[in-house]
Length: 180
Ligand SMILES: [Zn+2]
Image (tube, rainbow, N blue to C red):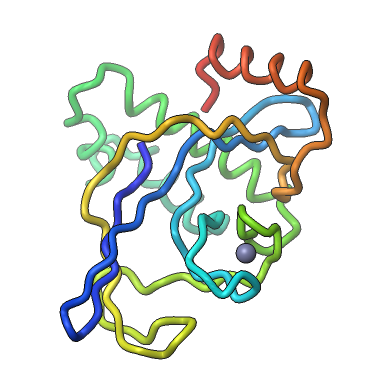
């Protein structure tokens, strides 16, 4: 589920922001990986936009190493969840994310304009707004439920140039296979 976020200013102003879902990378072999864009500052739009939030290979490898040890904190956290099989599914998704990270060439993209000059807010602590310099605090305030955007991209987040029919086929594949 996408995250719900709050952006807070020193004078008490607050803005609620949320992520969105239904965005998919399509690999050259047509396998599919979903991603959740989050609010970030796009220097081209000069606005808060939904942007890709990429994890680097080392962070993904580190989490996979932790999951390989059944007694690690991360393994125990996942095993404590209420959904049966979730830990295994999470590990499979991380492996696909790592595959994506190794193929990825380009910096993160603003989903709105496609430019790649994106600045993230600092989570959980007062820090300068990347656009205005004013101090703000950005934090995750929960999860939100949204509709599905149903948008498909290559592994570098370039929109796939496909027909409506091809798009419908990919969406059907997502629905039937519960792609990651
Ligand atoms: Zn933009």
